[in-house]
Image 1 (cartoon, rainbow over the protein chains, first blue to last red):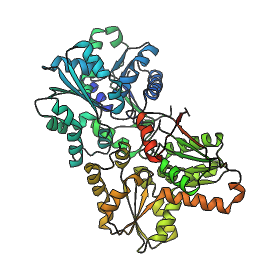
Image 2: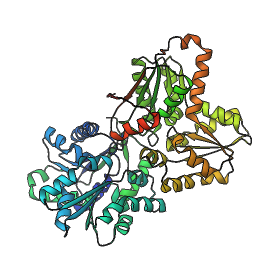
Image 3: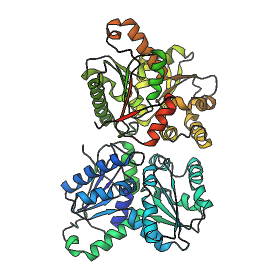
Image 4: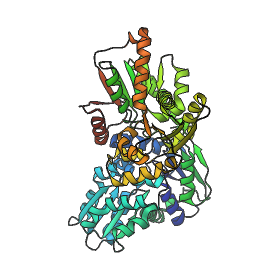
Length: 261
Length: 261
C-alpha cells in the first residue's frame, strides 16, 4: 500500500491528488488528530511523532511513505529517511522544484506554519537550486484553525489572509508556495488577495506527480503496491468535526478507524 | 505542593490567581504543550490525557490537584476524582456557583471550546442549582489560537468576538462565564462587545477563591502543603511562543522544564 501521514486530516488533500494521479492504488492514511496540530510545536517533538507515525504505517502494510504534512516534511524528513529503508516522499522538494521551474523573476513567496517557516527549509532548497533567487516566507498560524472551523468564505478569513500576504505583495513575488496542506482549501481567496498574475504552487498536487513519476520509473516498487482501490483511514482521535472535514475534503463517504499510538 | 495542569499554558491565568490568593504556596504546574489544544479533541482522549497529567503531578509532590483547563474540567473531572484519592478542584463548579450568585435575571451565557460546549456541563450544573434559569452556550474555537498568536488587540479579533457573542446578546444574558482559561486575556474586548451591564465571570479567579476557602477550612491538608514560594513549570514541549506566552501571563521570568510523558 501507499502509506500517508499527516498531523491531522489536512493531508487528505494529498490523498485526493494521489487518487487522481494513481487511481486504484491501495492507500493507508494515518492522521494524528490526538496530537494535532504540529505547526506550533518544536522540531524535536515533530520528529518523534513522525517516526511513530511511519512505524505505524509500515506495520499496516505501507511499502512507500508520503509525509503529507509540510511541518513534518520540513523538520523530520531527514530523520525518517535515515531510520527506515523504504522510499520516503515529502511535500517540500516537489513544491520547490515546481516553483523554481515556473517562476520567471525567481522571486518566490512561501506561506506555512510557524514551525515550517522557522525551519527555513524552503529558502535553503530554492537557494541550492537557484542561488540568485529571492525568497520570502511568512508564518500564517491562524489559517489552519480557520480552515478546520470551515470558515472558508467568511470576511474575517479574507481580512486575515490580506494581512498575512501584505509583506509578500510588497516584495512583488511572482510565485507563491502554499506550504501547508490546509491552504489549498483557501486557494481562491489567496489568489484574489495576492493578485491573479502570481502563480500558486499547491504542494499536494506536486507531491502526487512526484510519486507517480517515481513509480513509472521504478517498476520493481510499483509491482509490490496493491491496486484494488483499497483505502483505510486511521486517526488517533475521532470527533464530529474531523469526520466532517474528512468527508468534505475527499467528497465521498469516509470510515474513520480509531487507533492509539 | 499545589499541582495544576492545563492543556497548554492558558492555565497560567489560574496560577496567577492562586499566587494572588495564596502567596508563598509551593506550586507545580504541568502544561501539555506537546498535545495542545484539548478543546477540539474527543472526551475519551481528554480523559486519558488528564489521568496521565494528574499522575505526573502526584509523582512530583502535589497533594491537591487543580484542573486549570475548562475542557478537562468539563469532560474528565469525574474520572480524575474517582481514580485518585486527593482533593481535586476543577474550574467549572466555582464559575457556575459564582454566576448563579451574581445573575439577577438568571439568564446566563457561556463561551468555551467546542468540547466544553458539547459536554453541556455548565447547563447541567446551573439547572441543578436553579431549575428556572435560562442558559445559552456558544463554542468559540478561534479564540484560543487568536490568544496564542498574541492577537489581543487586532480588529480581526474584535470582529470574530462580535460574531461569536451575537446570539448571546440577542438572548439578553446578564451574566457571561468565560469558560476557557485563555479568555481572561480578551476580557476587555469581550466586555465591550457583550455590553458593560453584563457581569463577566472569570473562572480562574473563582477557582482560586475556592481553593483558598477549602484550605482555610481544612487545616490538616493546608498543613502538608509547602509554603516556601517554590514554583516549577513543566511542559511536554518547548517553543519560543510558549515561553513568551508564559512570561506575558505571569509577568515574571519563567523557566520551562521539558518532560516527556
